[in-house]
Structure formats: C-alpha cells, structure tokens
Length: 157
Ligand SMILES: *[C@@H]1O[C@H](CO)[C@@H](O)[C@H](O)[C@H]1NC(C)=O
Ligand SMILES: *[C@@H]1O[C@H](CO)[C@@H](O)[C@H](O)[C@H]1NC(C)=O
Image 1: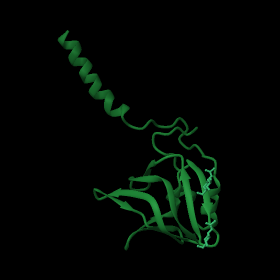
Image 2 (image 1 turned 30 degrees about the vertical axis):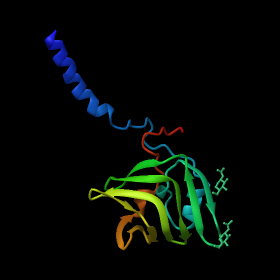
Image 3 (image 1 turned 90 degrees about the horizontal axis):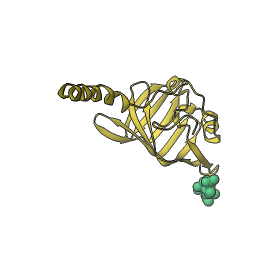
Image 4 (image 1 turned 135 degrees about the vertical axis):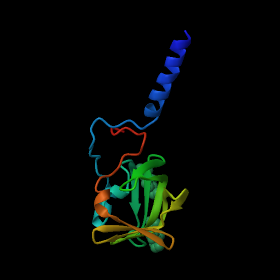
C-alpha cells in the first residue's frame, strides 16, 4: 500500500511538469488565414508575424494613419528568436506609415524580469527595430514571417 502511494506520487511528479506545458499542435506549421490587418502590414513593409492570427477587426484612418486592431481577447505569444514572452491587449492601437509604426499601445514584452511596452516598430532593410521608449532592439524580420497563434488557443479557432 505504502509502496503504491509512493509510486503514484512519483508518477504525478513526472507527469505534471509535462502536462502543464502548452500542447504541441498536430501540424507543426499550420498556416492561419490572412486577415486584412495582416495584408496591411505587408503593404506597409512589415512581416505578418507582428500580429497574432486571432485578429477580429481592423480599422485604419487614412488621414491620420491611426489604426486599431481588435483581437478576440488578450493574447500570449513567445517571440522568436530569444523566446521572450509577449502579451497583446484585446485592442492594439498606433500610427502606421511606410516602414514605421509609432505611438503603439497594447504590446508588452517580458525581459530582464520586467514588462516593457513596445512603443514603436521600424522596418529597416531585413531587420525589425523594436522601440521601448528611447531603447531599441533589433531582430531579423525573417523571425516574423508567420502569424503566431495565441498560446492556449487551438489552431482551428
Ligand atoms: C470594428 O472597429 C470599428 C472601430 O473601432 C467599429 O466601429 C466597428 O463596429 C468594428 N466592427 C466589428 C465587426 O466589430
Ligand atoms: C481621421 O483622422 C482625422 C485627422 O485626425 C480626423 O479629423 C477624422 O475625424 C478621423 N476619421 C475618423 C473616421 O475617425
């Protein structure tokens, strides 16, 4: 009896860490359908991977360049290549011009034990330059070629 209880707790210890991880999708590279917001990113010189697949609504004021993207809900993504955790608010707003997103609101990244709001993104040749206030970080744009699914959401939703 004692032995089987011990064995059972041992089993829990082994199984739990794995079951708490996000399940790997069956298809490793599911291609989500492109929304109008994703197409606009391309038009403005950005890769589609800056927005998750769960875009529900998108508006752009051509006069002021102000855009708003509505997601189905808040969204959590692990960003390549350094696996920073990023969160997207339900609504993301900013100003978009060719190669330049400014006054961005709604995307935060966890790094160095803190949450940072990404305030702007610039497209510079093959790189993306992320702005956090006065600080910038540069990443190859090819890391953002695919629109990610929010963690915990199924690829079919
Ligand atoms: C999309 O967003 C615009 C502006 O915020 C809003 O007027 C419109 O009702 C929204 N459409 C849908 C389908 O939610
Ligand atoms: C678009 O932006 C212009 C300039 O800021 C503003 O006057 C106009 O009301 C905006 N249009 C809409 C539909 O929000």
